[in-house]
Structure formats: structure tokens, C-alpha cells
Image (cartoon, one colour):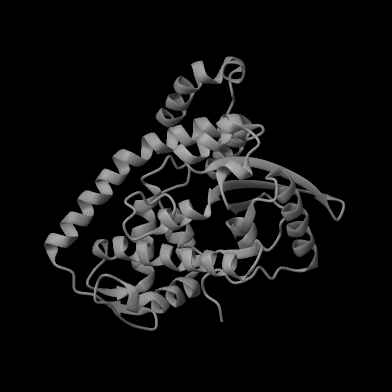
Length: 308
């Protein structure tokens, strides 16, 4: 059984919807797409017509993938670029939010030496490969998903107890990773995701145990791992620095998405409302002049507790 990036095996309507998205993405990005990584709530539910389909679109190069030189430069300087796409499938609209990453940036973003948790903190979680152009692209993508899990666990293990449940490592690590970004979810979000995918986190952890930096022993859902206190303290400092670095980067990525994501402000409002249950009203001046007024708007939302 393939743990890291199994091929997407949805029902017939889901596979048809994904194929429609693939064709549209290849056309939009000029045939540069190498593989598609499918993750998030639509993968968990198996229903691509409910909510937004979340994809990472892996391309051979940003210059090839973008008609605009500025879009290519922005993608290179602060990856990924985030876009919106919708297609019709089976008489219904399929809506997709996707992030564009080059194969090179994918490999760098999940590497053990990568300090920022933005990519390995996402791709360590359950994902499927919706499509790959050839066997090398498939192998590259699967290797990246496996490496993301190794990088995540190497940074999460010092936060956990010396022995216990594997799920506790993931809950602690994902909570810290989420804390490096602007998030609207409540503090229990990490634990609920781990609980919903408990079988996956155990299988994935055991599959990479031999490749971890720390000496790690596991048996089923239990583990033991002796880490010196000095290393634990260093890890806590690293996560504190990630929080300081990650919040400004989240703001910059969010602002960049306003120019690449159709209806970006409405998407932000929808996402905040979905996770908090509270209505978000976007002032007209923010819609008309986002660069001038979005800063105060975002600060107000943060102050009112829409995200942390």
C-alpha cells in the first residue's frame, strides 16, 4: 500500500471533476504542470462539489507556467502563488483553490534543512496524487511527501514526551506549525485533524522511523524517543522564531493572493466565517483600494479574534 501520495481513487463523479480541473490547469499554465497534489477537506469527504478543492500544482518552471513575467517573479520570490479556478462537471460547478510550486521549490520546501514549516507542515498530512505526467514526476512528488513527513517529525519530536502515543507528536507539531501562520481555526484544530486521520499518522510515522534524525522506537501507535533537554530547548526556540517569521510571511502571501485569487477578499471572508461562525463584512473602501486599506482591515479582524 502506498502511504505517501497514493493515486487519487475517488468515485466516478469525483474522478471526472478532477480530470476537468486537470485539463483546465494544463491549459491555463501552458502545459507546465508536472503533478497535482490533492489535500484538504474535499479529499477527506470524497465530494469535490462541496466546498473548495485544494490542490498543489507542481510545475516544471515558473517562467513556463505563467504568461506574466511579474507572476513568475512573484512565484519565485515568495512561493506559492495562489489561484482560483472553477469548471463545470456533471452539471455542477467544481471550485478549486490551488497553489503553484515548481518541482525545485517543492524539494527545497520539504527538506530537513528548511526552517520555515509552511510546506512540510502541510504536506506531512494525508494527501493524494491526483495526476502525474510521467513516472519521474510521480516518483518526485511521492518522495517530497515522504520527506515532508520526516522533516515534520524531526521538528515535532522534541516537543513531545519521551514516550507515548504517536498521535500526540502530531498534535503538538501541527499546533506549533499552525501557530506560525494567521489561522482562523480554534486551538483544537490540530488535534481534531489528527484524530480524523489517526490511522494515517501512525502508518506514516512508522514508515519513516528509520530516516529520522532522532533514535526513534515505535510499536503500533506507541513510541519512545530519548531527546536531550538541551535539544528540546533548542527546538522550542526554533518554533518561537518560526512564529516571529511566519506571521509576516503569511500576511505577504495573503496580500499577494488578493491579486492572483479571483474574489480574494470574498474568499478570505468565507473562510473566516466557515471556521468561526461569525459574519465578516468587507468595507467598500477595502474592496476599491486593497493596498491602502487592507492593513487596517486585517488588524481589526485579528483584534476581534477572527484569527491568531
